[in-house]
Amino acid sequence: MDKLSKICLDSSVLIALEKARISAEDLRREFPHAHFVISVISAFEQAYGAYILIQKGFKQKGEEILDGLKGFRTYPLTFEAALLAAKISAELRSMGKKIEPKDLFIAAICIQNELELLTLNVRHFELLSPYGLRVHNARPFLKKK
Image 1: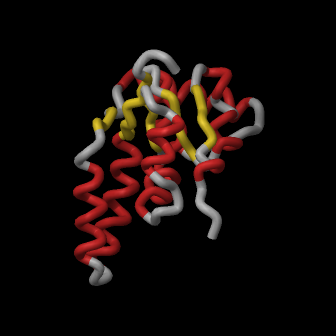
Image 2: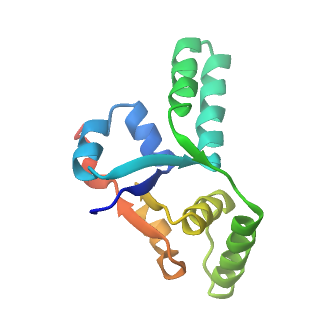
């Protein structure tokens, strides 16, 4: 990666970062020319989890997650990306394959904005590489328990 690339972190990676199972330093070392971003779908998923924590009495932890989200450029779900997700979903259905709508939205946002995707769910998202999704496996960055 010579030029500055944009890598979208999916929720699995955001959770691993939050739980210190993946190191931000390791990601920066592996992708030195990358700008890390998120989709509005991942922002929703993380915010939902944060508000659940707050409701359960873990206010500080929930607020830390919400504050952390503010540091990322967030890409929206546009009309065009929604149409692309619908088209991909219909094509996958005709092949007997199914992917959750939220993951299709993340993939479509990445494809529309020429973002690469960093995820722990590589097998799941690799089904979408024929549509132009570029997927990176985050598993090598997981710290051993």
